[in-house]
Length: 332
Image (tube, rainbow, N blue to C red):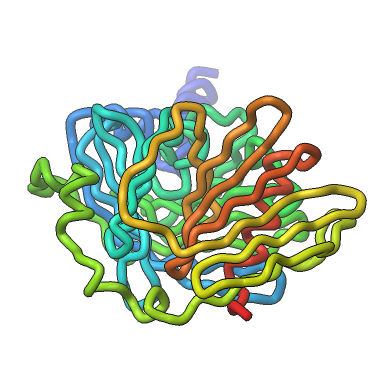
């Protein structure tokens, strides 16, 4: 009997060793991720990534560089695939900003965009999202932790998010936003990630970013002649009128089941603020959304042109879909 007991105990010890050396559990990995996220409160980083947006049979490619000093001080530089800078999202002690250096344009507004929509770009927000999302599921494959979780809030375009981390360092490798069919609508692939970077105070100053470039440094897209962009007929709408386009502006009216006004113009240099504005991401193109007095509006810059949609019967998600549909269009 003692021999049997000894054998059972021995097997139990062996089994315990095997379990202890097995695949890490989701709980143990989450604890490591929580520690990693906490360390970012006192550790900076810089990342370089390529973002591919595949929507409506069109593909757009952007460069994305993040300079992160702290949870309240960071910069997201967005450019084309040749890394020509188009716009910069900046957060500092004075608030949130969208900066277009070549156009010498600055938008200022309030809001906590990082927690609401900045997860795809900001590493610290990715980690916090993984550890707080109760529906996040983890798998391990080829030295990677793969997290899949529903997108909140869900949209008609994006339903699921997939985050891939290096299993040894927990550094980001890729982020994918999947549609309802499981196809990647947005893919952010990290090319490099490094910590302990030396930043300057001017790196997070919108005015310094604007003054660093002049109108003579405009990209080829921004030097092209103005041509108005006509969105497709979405949400039961169609264009009902078009003001006589000038060399610098155009106004399009859409009617039908819904109604909206789309203004397009060459912006003038300067700064403007909207305390009620909310930063939203059009996947590579930042925009400002407002909702006041039963009127919604969305404003953004693309290829050297400023756009503004206003409507009294379209919601934020619908405005965003209309805006996204214009990003790959060529002006007429």
